[in-house]
Length: 312
Image (cartoon, rainbow, N blue to C red; front, side, top):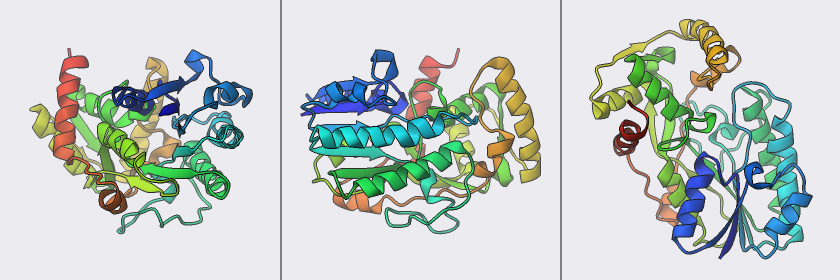
């Protein structure tokens, strides 16, 4: 098949594009670095022509406020869908985000649990939710599927799209894992190759199905303890109360500005980190045969890569 991947040079997109090429597909990568600006619809016209499938992964992912969030995550999404319709693309697969569901409390979210939300944690969260509303409207017009991944981690550049691996490296280097809200928040952790596998499996289904592609629901203390075990690193795991975590976010903000590195957490986004983000991938497991690895196996694979590529 001829497949276009927007965001094809990014953390997840580059991994997906490489996998699709290994499977023999004709893959067209779209990114600003190779001349495709999704904020301009005209740039998509040639890219989508004669494509069977479009994977739309491009998005602005960062913690700091930016007036480009809505332009990229909402208006450019509209551009992609309009050009998919004009080019008669047979299948469009849009990568949404686990954040659109809002905090999960005690019940894991699935494809049907999409609440109406009025408050948001940050601009990324808000614009991904707005983008989801655009996508749900377009499902009535084009063959469109929506995919909701969990918190992705694993090999790849340490950008804000791979913030969890960035966090693991910091834990290793500082020998300290400070855990917000006493380490109790439960997140859904999914290894990057499992998300890629799920997206590829998605191609085997007819259009019209949406899927959550997640992994293990584990609390932050389990994350730290598992990483300490697989890395063999002597490391202090320090659960801290929410108030202290908020105070530490001011120091994180200052350090990231001075070092020109991605911030792990900012004062304006600290509430996001103390919430539960549980997901259920039961539908994908049943219908697609999706089988994500455990957190232990995923962190072991991540550590092998980190020790080879990141640790001096």
